[in-house]
Image (tube, rainbow, N blue to C red; front, side, top):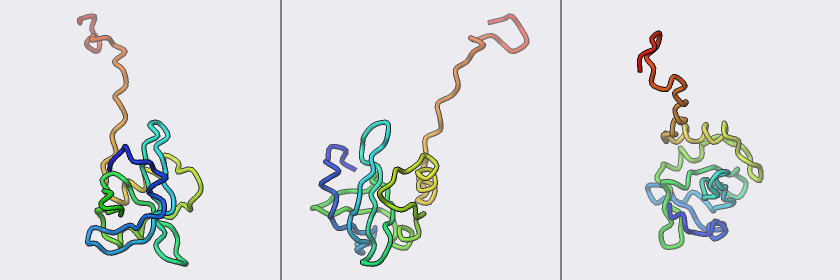
Length: 123
């Protein structure tokens, strides 16, 4: 998604699934804790329905509407964490897995042997 867009401008926009079926309206936008980049949108799926979280990457903002590259049924079945609260790293991981998105592996631990072969003094 365009990272230069003001997340406040997403609120109230209509959202559509990969087939062009209306999902609902963007209710809230959640930013990444480390980067401040918009990462998730909570979509109000109906008048008396709950909000469904959708990833903003790889979604697109096209002609003022949010297009989410997933089926409506998958979006409506996303884990429900409620809105208005911070998403924990574990909750985000659950959402990434729900959508089948790859999550970057943690960086490798530093090599404390400094190039020595195990059990020897060789380098």
